[in-house]
Length: 109
Image 1: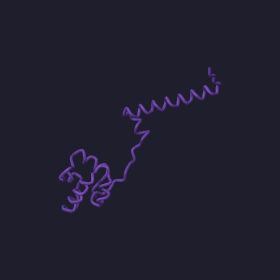
Image 2: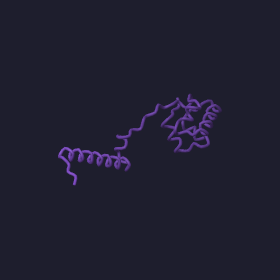
Image 3: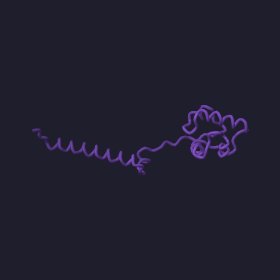
Image 4: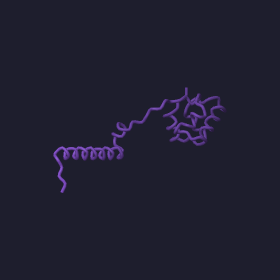
């Protein structure tokens, strides 16, 4: 039979408690509680002016796919710029949800 000293027992209990608290925290985060924003904060990206954004900047943003980036640039060039973000509703592929995502990342000056 294996016997542990009191120091070994304390170390084992500490490691066990640490692992258990890690599991509990992970469960809280995955259950969409408010703690997820505290533990894993979302980085705030700099917003870009849609009238000055290049094709590469549009392509590399998460909210605009590559094909839609080309359509937005074509619309901007054809209309002499974008006056309001709501004007993008006229571009094929931009619906209400996509427009909300674009609002988070871009602005119009």
